[in-house]
Amino acid sequence: MTDASTNLKRAAQMIADARSVVILTGAGVSAESGLATFRDPEEGHWSKYDPMQLATLDAFNADPELVTRWYHWRFTRARDVQPNPGHFAIAALQKHKAEQAQSLTLITQNVDGLHQRAGAADVVELHGTIHTWRCTTTGKETPLSELSFDTFPIPSAAGGLMRPCIVWFGEMLPQEALERSFGAMAECDLFISIGTSATVEPAASFLLAAKGNGAATIEINRDPTPNTSIVDVALQGPSGSILPLILNELGIG
Ligand code: BV8
Image (cartoon, protein in one colour):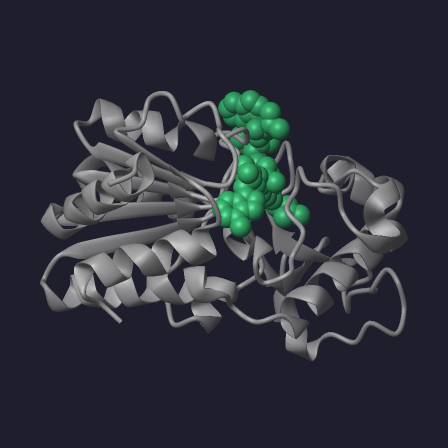
C-alpha cells in the first residue's frame, strides 16, 4: 500500500472517529470549478492585475470603476461555473456528521457561494460574500440580484457607491463569523484545512489554534503550505479527487 493510500485511509478513520469537525477552505477548493485562485496566475484580462492590489479599500477609493469591474467579472465567473466534486463531498460529509449527531462547521475564505450551491449549510463566510453589496454611505445591503451593472461604479440611492460585502485586506472580519469560528475551533477534535495557502491572517493561524486546543489536523492541498509540516496527515493533490475518495472510504455518498 502506498503512503498516499495509507494517509488517505488514516484521514478517513480520523474523520469517522471525530465528534466535532471544523473544515477551513480557501480558493483551491473552487479551482476545479474553473475559478482562478489568488496566487495562481489569473487567465485573461485580469492577468495584468494582482488581486492583492485590487482587494483593498484604498484600491476601491482610488479607482472604484476598476475594482467594481473586477468584482463584476469575478461574480459573473462564479455564477457561470458549477460546484465541483470537492464542494459536494464536503456538503455530504457535513450532512453525514449531522445524521450521526456529530458536528461539522464549514468555514470558508471564499466569497463565491459554491459551497452553498453544493448543499452545505450554515457556511461561515469569513471574508464575506460577493452575492451581497452595500452602500458606502449608509451601509444598507442589497442582494446582487437586485443590482444593475449598466454603469461602473454603481451609485447608491444615498449618493454614495455600492461595494461588495467582502472583507478587503486591511479590513476587520465580520464579528459573527469570527465568533462562530473561534467557538467551533475551541470545541473541535479534528481540524481539516482544504485548498488554502495558509498565508492570509487571521485564517492562516486557525489550524495552529485548533492544534493548540488538542485537535487532530489534516491538510488537503495541491501544494505544500506553512502548515504541511505540522499537520497529523497531509494529503497533497486536488481536493476534487481526494475528498470523494475519502467519502468512499467512509461509505458515504
Ligand atoms: C484583518 C476577500 C484585522 C477579497 C480576502 C496578522 C493578523 C491580522 C492581520 C494581518 C496579519 N498579518 C497581515 C495581516 C493583514 C492581512 C493579511 O493577512 N495579509 C497577508 C497577505 C499577509 N489580513 C487582513 O487584512 C485581514 N484583516 O485581519 O483585520 C486588522 C485590520 C487592520 C490591521 C490589522 C488587523 C483581512 C483578510 C481578508 C482579505 N480578503 N478575500 C476577495 O476575495 O476579493 S483574502 C483572499 O485570500 C481570499 O479570501 C482567499 O481565499 C484568501 C486566502 O487565499 P487562499 O484561499 O489560500 O488562496 P491562494 O490562492 O492563496 O491559495 C490557494 C491554495 O489552493 C494554494 O495553496 C494551492 O496550492 C491550492 N490549490 C489550488 N488548486 C487546488 C488546490 N488545493 C486543492 N485542490 C486544488 N484543485
